[in-house]
Length: 103
Image (tube, rainbow, N blue to C red; front, side):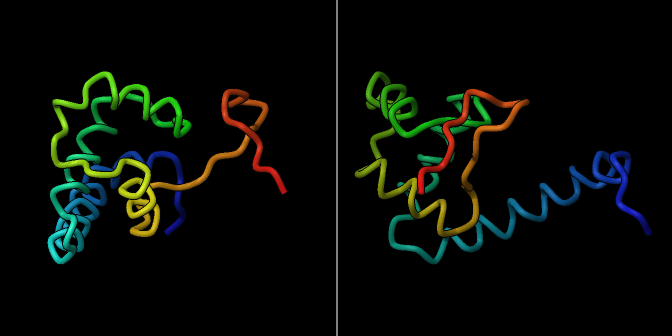
């Protein structure tokens, strides 16, 4: 079976539900599960697929009372990166907003 754009569209909801269950299971065994869950809600409320740390920090600080379980934002974001939830982005012709990774 070839993976086409239609295939991704068709299977995305099933994969997303599976990934979310796996992520929830993985988070449940960590000591900082409340912080991780709150950070996921913060990212969802930020409503951007791409962000830089200063941008989400500013958003968080303006609404910090809504996320009392986040003790250390940068540390929690790093943990989400380690879990594979967050990744890196690089500047491309179609997305000039993202900074290029420095060597």
